[in-house]
Image (tube, rainbow, N blue to C red):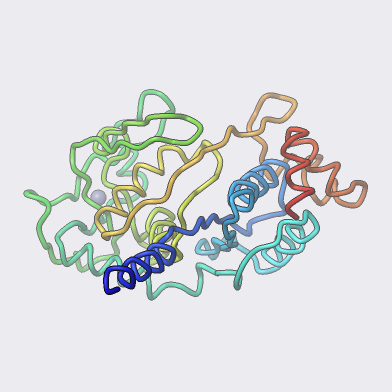
Length: 296
Ligand SMILES: [Zn+2]
């Protein structure tokens, strides 16, 4: 009898622990959505919804100079128009500083961070541009000897950098397959808080994905390298990283990545003369479009 009861108990516990799929769309409110943003949003929505998962919207408005509340509002109205409903309240990064502060405090206490007083010009001079795409990799000018170790922050204005070890981060992207990234060579010590006090993208995104229980991240392939930085941060903060599925970037007629300046592909232009079906048909396969019809 006891054995029977305990089996039921185990089963109930397993049901509860069954990981729930939780995806997210995390746009920056710096302009009107264009087809590239629509593509990322709908792919992430389809991925979560087609497996009975939740989908949340997080407004990444930590860049106070470029973000505008009216763009965020418009973005939410555009998602509604596209039939991409979300779960729970919309999250705003600008209201989550306390969580980023706590994570940074923890990394600092473990001796993983240091203050960097370099100006942009100094960094350009002392750093090696990465061969393949010209990315600038910080040369470690301000890095104290013998990291990781706790170091007092400099008195003057400084950015906070994360010391990264000379080792590979490995992960398997759902679309791009196995990835292996040497953090020291490919990223260098990266910024967690800028010298003007603004939170850096990598820290905010990792903390949010961790605390919001995100299990899968579907986003543009320009962020594939960021996944390695974020996985390393997940590890340091003691969280399980989500599964990553990076999707190809959409190109304009000139073969360049779609950007805010491609007005013709912006919802500003497309929405008044089109239906959600027509807009989505431009970025989805017929099978994906049928799935969206079924799930919305
Ligand atoms: Zn420096």
